[in-house]
Image (cartoon, rainbow, N blue to C red):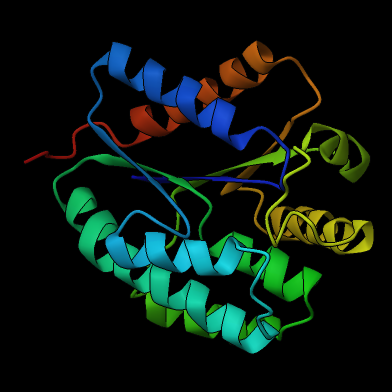
Length: 208
């Protein structure tokens, strides 16, 4: 089962990912945590380029760099883990590209979907947890040493958030929206309820 965490920068994904990892360990559920871009040597090097403010990257180049990192991560880490019956917890995946490069940057959404399908061999998350937070709150939370993506202006991040909500509106069965304004423990409990329901729905699958 592939579970993805999504949301604008500053929404608290990293905190919730750590809480979820701890809970899965306590429950004895085998899982593999990964992040995008990253998770492989190529992905981590690509991440440094994409997020460093010294680089001025065109939208098209940005899009292809994300796709290259995603393809490597999917083929060398995610798919092998899923084949073994493990849960994969991915911090960002295809919805991030739609929200950031698509709704935020203006790239063609159909093109993004096509490229993502190629990069992932058609893999789609079984569950996506969208931590939703108003841009104003996210700006307060973000540290002053923001990376290249975080340092984009308010209106960019507003388009990204609106894009996420539109994606969630179109796929309510897969994407569950969680208020990132609520206390961390409340968010964690809500996330676990969704994860637990997913596990029960998929009981009986083999594991290597």
